[in-house]
Figure 1 (cartoon, rainbow, N blue to C red):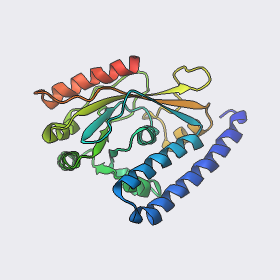
Figure 2: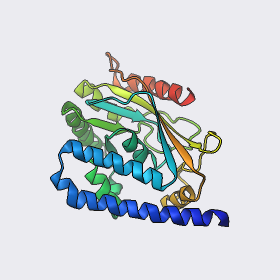
Figure 3: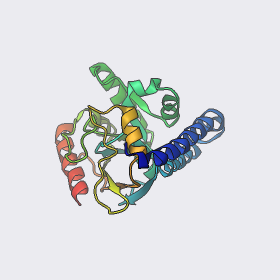
Length: 248
């Protein structure tokens, strides 16, 4: 890292740690006394505070669904995506099971209502689809990344259809979402937050904390129902919707 960026990274790190501590305190001591709606608001407020601590401005385009049931389907660029979506609109995420065991972060994710999945287990994927369908039938907002992994931010990977079965089973709409990160100084695409296979989480976080101020853009498309499509056909169509939102 450029030595000139080191003070910026250290200052942001201190702010991030303070925000993490605040979130942990809220979940452990405040959440038991809050209603579900109050908890959702606390999660969104905390996520917006975390973005500010990292020097990231949130920009929302389009209209988020006012209420569930709805399944959010977004492209996946970075570990930041979950924070950005929570800041734009509270939702329950489907995340890999390892996150549940991460120190502090696991407690925060669980408190925010995350559904965990063992990605290598077909049986567990079916279990999570049933849980997602139950959440949708209960009127909740659930979010997935159909690519299944983070990309380089330049190309949209193919969408996996398995988790869309929850929306088919619950007869719930899916809202396509395009995420992107811009350099705040020139509004050009910035790939600093991208988290690819060769990256380590610590390295990616540190690179982002030392990077330029960013704008996180969340572009919401129109919700749509399956309208007789099977999950594979729907996944292909949603891929096209997200791609159009990314380029628009």
